[in-house]
Length: 443
Image 1 (cartoon, helix red, strand yellow):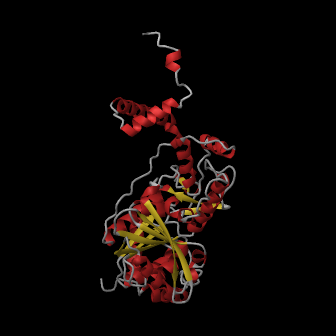
Image 2 (tube, one colour; image 1 turned 120 degrees about the vertical axis):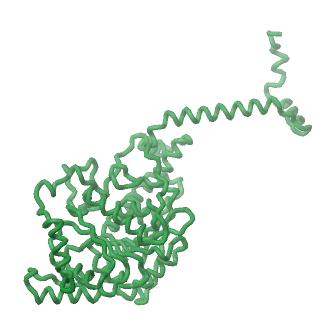
């Protein structure tokens, strides 16, 4: 056992699981088992009719006004995606903050937390789809504002639009719906994420730990492969309780990869470069990898090797297919409705993403101090589907109210002032003398 190194352990793992499967036509074109996160809900004809009435200046009924207000809130979450929980909007609180760092930069973040007593685990999420979702949120906001009549107060461009990723992406959605506070970088911070100096990240982690509802013993970092190198650099700081990262498919830490694993010198240099960062990580690590990763053998040696050599607390979960792919949006696509605001959209593999979110939640539950708690879901019944029943309920409410008032009027004993008011009102009435001129024939 003394002669066994990390390469022997990793090779034995591959022998047990078998070699990675090669992509083929059947495994790559799985439209029926993929879903897209930038889908737009179909226009509701009754909502469109309400908007037409508003533009014409008609007054809305109480129910129509309620439906339009819910539409304007724009907290809807498409039910077409199997891993998107329809969270009740009133269960969430959104905040935007700017963090000043030692380098003088100002980094902007949005965080969303349950509107309930804490503490809650927290996750800083690094994902390029945050930018796409923010663009969609801006377009949705502009579209809604154009529908609001000029007489109405302008809709505030709040965090629920810019932070749309948290409720509409499967990673952000599953975290927040399980009671995990989600923090995401936005705008320039996201654009320059990989260029942020390492000395700035402790200030960001300090800010995250200062959020009142956050459990400081349950601070996690979640990253997709695009920001894997940045995630490993952040994880070298001791403020984290866990790193959850998707295995990269390219070099990290600005390292160029060798053309072949047979180049022993280049592979050794690459491993040393990785080792300088990975060796400083103390928190548990969960790595999600897929069997189709083109550089899995390089990662076995340069990334997983140092983790095993340094006896890090490492969890490895393998999927058969990539978690998602970036696909062009074209008219004939398998989606019922096209994605918007971007020429490309993310297609997620259902099985792979289901495994990822389950592993993430299990990892957070077992490596954090606070338990996960499921947030209440918004009703999935379409608003308009119950219009008839809602009208009947409203009619019944009005009838009950009128019956109560009639019963109250029969037992009402007016004061002297009230009686005098009634007498004066009757004396001034245009119908005064009506009973005397037209006597009751029943008598």
